[in-house]
Amino acid sequence: QVQLQESGPGLVKPSETLSLTCTVSGGSVSSGSYYWSWIRQPPGKGLEWIGYFSDSGRTIYNPSLKSRVSISVDTSKNQFSLVLNSVTPADTAVYYCARGDVGLGVGHWGQGTLVIVSS
Amino acid sequence: AIQMTQSPSSLSASVGDRVTITCRASQGIRSDLGWYQQKPGKAPKLLIYAASSLQSGVSSRFSGSGSDTEFTLTISSLQPEDFATYYCLQDYFYPWTFGQGTKVEVK
Image 1: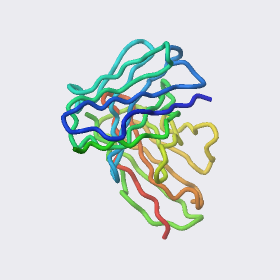
Image 2 (image 1 turned 135 degrees about the horizontal axis):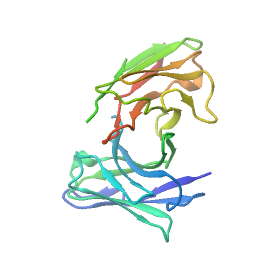
Image 3 (image 1 turned 30 degrees about the vertical axis):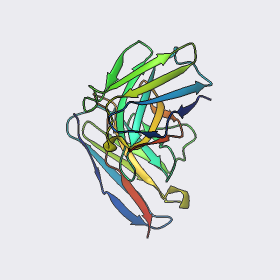
Image 4 (image 1 turned 120 degrees about the vertical axis):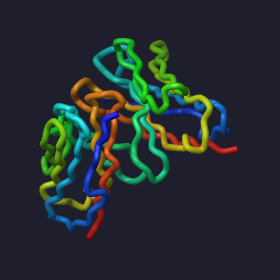
């Protein structure tokens, strides 16, 4: 059973860079037809898809964040990462890493990590 | 981006009630839609994928239907553990987009 776990700083200053890592266990980030995804949820609000890295090497981002976001994979550590530049308080959210399967929805989620953007 | 309009935004229901939640897409998305349940402080959980396929391990009281632009999640007989917020997600076209959520509360 694949499991995902987010890690990273819980507090980031405005204008700085948010960096999170998702460690995958019970499966490999380099096999299968999967979408290794990041999704976020501001406190008390709905879900927003940030983007994904697919096993084919394709990376797709939400245009609302595209100029500031980057997702990468480290196959040696079985991890994938999110970098979000020039953060503002509007980027305060619970950040989830997740695995989507082609045609089968997003079936595996990390527990989420709260990142607060504040000075 | 494809807009997903979910309704209602909230509803009050009793245990045993039949509950229906609707998601409308601003353009056709075939059957590339999933339904997710989220409880406070927890990650979303996949209930239905491909509009009508039940995720393994999910109770059969949950069902999904629809295609193209109109989709429905039905809970046939609401149970205490079903009080939660439900979201639809289209993964047909980038960016993937969620509905705004439906909070199912105790009547």
